[in-house]
Length: 155
Image (cartoon, rainbow, N blue to C red; front, side, top):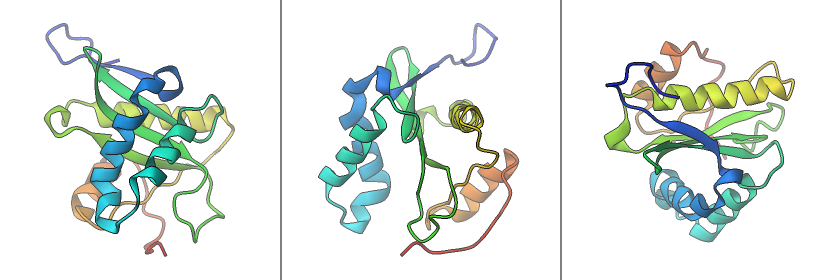
């Protein structure tokens, strides 16, 4: 993956199921980014990432690596808003470490989850944005042709 220009930033993307040694690190990213402020126990997040590291189709997780250093992640899940169980599947937990943002990694990770959903015969993929950075995230996703569907708060 990455750009074709040899002077540009390069990275690869792999399934977490092929790199299970990174489960704890990715769970830590998710915990610190989204779950800590909700007082979620880290063990819950860790178990969730252990499930994403299994070899089945959903849930799954991809990791972006630059020079064998993990720099980003994204997941594909059946459910990400508990009061919208009617919507399946979900792009979830897109995260790129701050020093690596703006290099196309997030878009490539999204592409991996979109393609995986298509391979599983899903015609739609859903996501929600966190309550923080809402304007920035809305801009990020609409630039990538995502369409606003609903405004909701998870219970």
